Image (cartoon, rainbow, N blue to C red; front, top):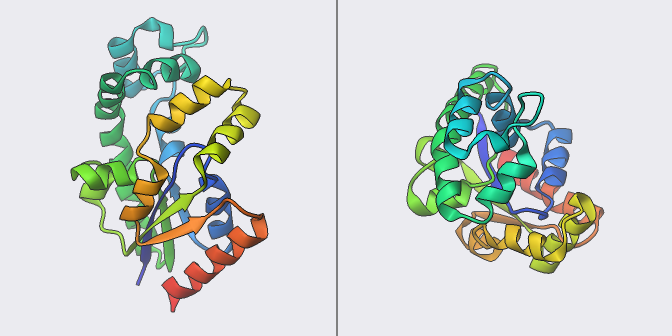
Length: 205
């Protein structure tokens, strides 16, 4: 039997760090963001739809998606975010379902689906949450100030931009309220690793 985890968090919460720890412990990772990059590749139908919806300014000189330019649009406009989701989510969810099926067929014990908008979809009954059955959901938590600081340090955003991106998402506290389990990623890596190890042992027991 394959145990299926839905994992989410927020910008700067440290979700990728937890992903890496889970993979180290033998989990198969299906990462929605990686699949998004694949379906938005130059020349893809999805990229053509994005260009038609948001204009040629979101395509760079090499014909690839200019993620910074698109981010400037969608993090300022909820309707634009919704429009982008209607273009990108169907093919991404389809590919996640396909990979999950393959993992089940291969007899994998633990599969983690990292889905940034998992709890937004759970709240509205849409997206991956409406299609995939999870055995457990996990939220990765960090205080908002740490989310902001990590973006400033990692992405070079000014404080205003970092705050805008954090607050464009469902709050981490609300996601944690909806999750079956919470990983507190505000402390040391060792502390996070202990929490991840304990959860994996629980899931595979």
